[in-house]
Length: 124
Length: 124
Image (cartoon, rainbow over all chains, first blue to last red; front, side):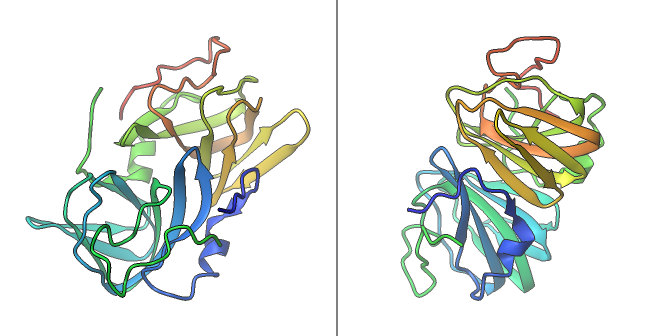
C-alpha cells in the first residue's frame, strides 16, 4: 500500500490520470478509509457491499444509481450514501467523474466478481 | 443523532444553511464517519485530534492550514488529510467553504475547548 499522507491532492488533476471506466483509483487515505476517483460511463453491474456503506460524490457530469425499487440521479456537487447490504447498479449515459469514499479493501463489485472487478488498492 | 441516509445531498444547497463561521454541520454519515460542512473566515485555534486523521476538501474559496513547520494552502477542488495527533491551525483570509470528513463525535477544537468549540453532531 502506498500512502500519500501529508500531500496536497488536486482532485481534477488526479482524474486526468484515469484512462479506464469503472476502475476506482485511490488518491488518499484517512485512518482505514480511502478516497477513490472513478470515471463512469455505461452500465456497471448489480452488487452490494455487505460490510460497509459507500459514499458517491459527483465531481463532474451526471450519474444514476439504480436500486431494486427506485433510481437516484446525481449531478456535480451531489453526494449520496448507499447503505451497506443494499443492492445497487451505477450507470452513466455520458462520462462522469465520481469520488468514492469507503473502507480500504472494498471491492468495486462487492462479492459479484466479474470482468468489471478492479484492483481495490491501486493508487494514482 | 439524526440520519439522512438514503437522501440525495446537494452540497452547495447545504452551505446556504450555514450562518456561522468555524461551526461544522453534519450533512451525512457513512458507517461511523460524518461528512460536515463549515465556513471558514479568519483564524481558528491551534489544536489536534489525538484519535483520528481529518480530511479537508475545499468546495469554494481558499484556506490555509498552518503546521508548526509549514503552511499548506488549499483551493477549490483540493483535498488534504491532517494526520492524527498533528497540531494544526486553519485560517482563511476570505470566506471559504470546506467539507470535513472525520469520525462522528470528533470535536472541532480537539481537546482545546474554547469559544470556538462547536457542537460535534449538529445536522443541517
